[in-house]
Image: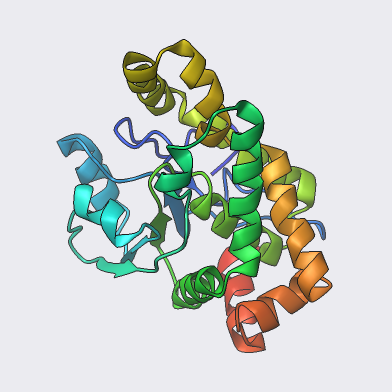
Length: 252
């Protein structure tokens, strides 16, 4: 796949995309292999999009949502793909409902991303996801909006592949463009029930921001010293798993 080729898009899951983009460059001159790992928001799919997803030949659909989220919109059964669940902590609903300012919303998002590193529950989930992905592709992982829990897993994969931080950040921020339609629907519902001022309060929780990603990386450095130690000691990934992930991720 070249930079000029459009990769698979799903209209009913607007934040669905290949983790590799169109083949991101690595720091050592290689590139990330496409068609191995996919990321998405929740899979409320039209018939056409379901057929397109089935055509990928997925072996697993990995759900990062809570049981409550799953109960509202369960994943479809994709033929040939095992449905797996690793419950990572997302944005707590009870905290969302009590937000009164944009500054509180930003602070909440920083806390959520720091929790990806600090909370044992999250480390268990993310370690389990990466071990499952090391079994081989093609596999898909997702959460509700495909931006925070999913965005963290994608950032870790690209780091493992050897992609530089500016590219990781650029890929992470693609969510804001790709999910514009679904975000607009959420904002419309918020405005309907709480008015435009409430939309402004909640807006930081509906997007991604490099500040959030940086909060997670800062927690990694604070608690583990570097990312290698986080992957090894925090997520419990052994050398064989990391080597296998690199082999899967890298095209050269």
